[in-house]
Every structure is written in C-alpha cells, then in structure tokens.
Image (tube, rainbow, N blue to C red; front, side):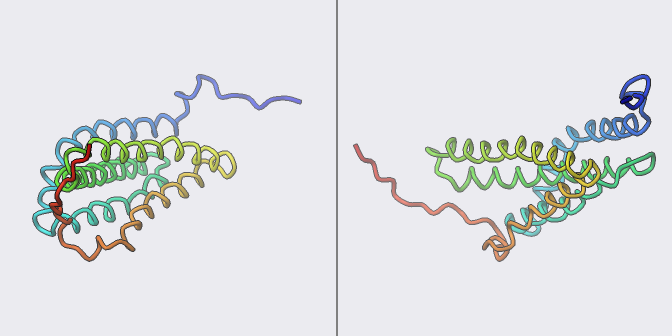
Length: 185
C-alpha cells in the first residue's frame, strides 16, 4: 500500500494556505486598531444615540451577521471577506464588551464586582476551547469548509440570545437599585 505523495516544501508552499495566512495576518494587524478605535467611535455614539440597551443589541446583531463571510474566504479576491469579517467581528466584540463592562461597573455593587466580572470571564473563556474542540470534531467528520459554515452560522445565531430577554424592550440598561446593605457578624 503506497502513501499519497506529500507536496514538496511544506505547508507554506501551498498557495491556498499562503493566501489565507496573508489575509488573516492583514486582518490581525487591524484588530488592535479596532480595539483602540471602535469604543470611542462606535460604542459611545451608539449608546448616546439609541440608548445603551439598544446599542448592545446593535453591536451584537449587525456585525455578527457578517461572520459567515469567513467561510467564503478561499482564494485571491475572496480573502477580502476574511479581512472585512474579522474587522466587523472584532468591532462587535469590543463594542459589546465596552457596553457590557460599563453596565456591570455601574450596576453591580462594588463589593462583589470582582466576583461577578471573574465569573463572566470564566464562562466566556471556557467557551473558547469548547468551541475549538467542537469545530475540530465537525471538521474531522465533515470537512473544513463545512465546519466553517456551521461554526460561523452558530456564531451569528449567538446574538439571538437577546431576543427572548427584556433587553429588546429597553432603551437603556437599568440603573442600579440602591438597597440597604445588611451587615451581619
């Protein structure tokens, strides 16, 4: 039984991989710029114009709907989809995080803010390896392109979690309700 011939020169000599890597690298250069530029240019004006609750919805729905563009990236001109999608996703995530963190800081009492923030970050970061594992399983079973379509569609659908919540009826996120703190010994 003979094994198939491996391409010479390794992965970097593969045209598709090199092009994808180039597009991803350009996109990743834009991500730090997005992290610095998006909050003052997008999150704050959205919050002032539409209210913080609606700004959170807009920042979640609109850019994440472009996530399936990542699955379209294949060759030369299609790599622009990767750049555009990554910038929109980064902008969405940064804007949502800015609005969410500002809300937590204003709403959660300061004596438990650290615990609330760490619990939220633990759940958020725990989903990353779970998503990577799931993507690997899907890619192994059905192929990389199919895995890309399934995962990007799932990411786009993740913003639908806000629809059944009362958030969609609010203009602004609720202010903190001042309640007396009971001190016990």
